[in-house]
Image (cartoon, rainbow, N blue to C red; front, side, top):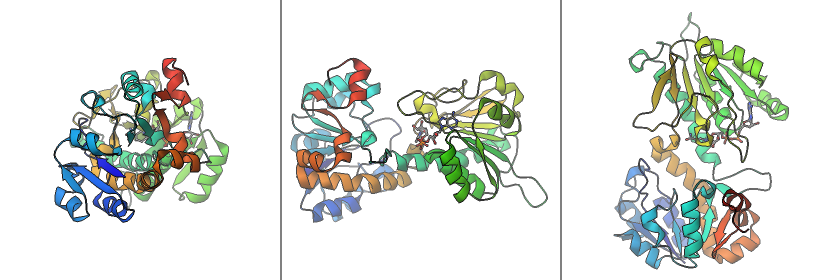
Length: 363
Ligand code: NAD
């Protein structure tokens, strides 16, 4: 198969869909890999590294769309690309179609085979191509919070860790899934006093076995949240209710009860956010202040650490990409239910219920 790796064109997106190490594996499996020039520079991979791994560097996205059997992106194709997509071509990337009617209709029109990273699903319900980005965002949330607690950034002037003789910061993490657990681990490692909340008792039991002693596991409830935010220096929003908007767990009227200069990082902002006062921000202008509380609500946090994110993402995507390339999409979907669940629009038909439901389309 000819596999094409496109350069990302979305603003502030520096990740790339395949590393030179991935190209080498594809080559070992007998495939040809085309890489758009400069596709890897944002992640620290120059064209020469791809060439050395056996890729052919091509000048334009059009050449990739014209020649490749499977094209790989990180983010969804954008309008200038729609008409380049060919009938029967495999498009393997994050698609998030339920939020994008224009793209869904374009993919139906182009009759391509569109496999979304985000709906590939394991038998236990986990989403293996979303997990690495949640790991990155969770860990990064604490790094960002620590930064905005510093006075030059408008914070209270508090060191997360404290020092001998001085209390550490109090960090409240709401949601004990992938994001929340990674955030709590980082905060605990730095020596903060950490409260980690979830609604799922089984999950709390598991976390109480694996988290360190400075992590206090609590059942999430409006009353607990209301009390904890009063003493929090940092609050991390990390809840997810699959297929739904994030619940507003911290309401506007709780903000005046919080410390001035406290930092909230609403990682769940991509699902609408779990703070009533959250609105999406960007890496260029990541924070704003409401009632003295610093809000960090960047919707694509992993983009700021593109090197780590690219490696984390491609570690997870490559085995699927190789399987699709080796078997072709039909056999790959027949033999691997996880890949089948990734199919969103195939040959002009919507094949994922959530997408069909979002736009009242036939499924
Ligand atoms: P997850 O499914 O692993 O975890 C979510 C957890 O929230 C679950 O354990 C669930 O029990 C818990 N939960 C649900 N309702 C709750 C409540 N009322 N109180 C406390 N806990 C509650 O999901 P995840 O991978 O950790 O992702 C969390 C959020 O972060 C998602 O919205 C995801 O899209 C988002 N995310 C954002 C970025 C970004 O760049 N901003 C990056 C990655 C993930």
